[in-house]
View 1 (spheres, rainbow, N blue to C red):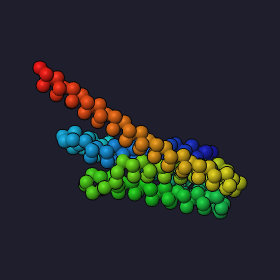
View 2 (view 1 turned 90 degrees about the horizontal axis):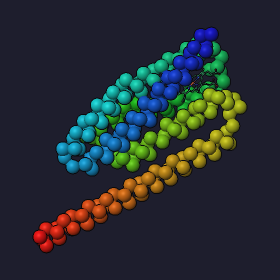
View 3 (view 1 turned 120 degrees about the horizontal axis):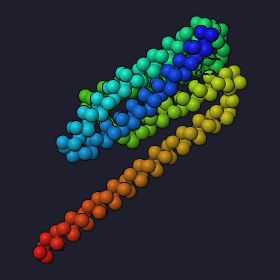
View 4 (view 1 turned 30 degrees about the vertical axis):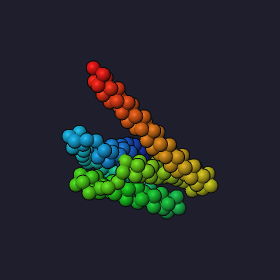
Length: 200
Ligand code: HEM
């Protein structure tokens, strides 16, 4: 029975952890793009994002990670033979990568706060795709275990990376086009106002 309790809270921990990881790097995107705003909006926005990032990291993401790992230890102590399975060894390797990503995000957060991070919004958008790939592989390993479908999973992961990279590029182009349109509209409005003033 203890095993089921550990598994239930292991999965709840995973959901909370990933919600935090995904939203944290999205906040980094907005934080980095706030540098393009004029003052005083830039300082106000950056201060607000810093507060949101810190709260999210310490109150949601970190506890999510602790619950996931603590419940995993509970699972392994109740059923230690799981540790002998090949799928578990591979899963643990990906979990180590996920933990490295988690703490790297913490480091980026501190660098953003100190104004020492030169990453663009586009860089953060690309970084935010890493946990999606880790989530896919870890969940497939946990579900299929030793009958893990290596070929299909490799193609799925590859396809996912291509789709995500293409979406980031397309979205960047759209944002560029929208910005050019907005600037052109503003310029023509200023022109009309000036010619109106001259004729008056
Ligand atoms: C701290 C490292 C982790 C360890 C030691 C660990 C260990 C375990 C163990 C022993 C089980 C039970 C397997 C079974 O009943 O057959 C399990 C289930 C599961 N784990 Fe983890 N886990 C870890 C991290 C993660 C992470 C980060 C994720 C998600 C990204 C994850 C997703 C899952 C899922 C979806 C299941 C349910 C699988 C099923 O019942 O079919 N685990 N984990």
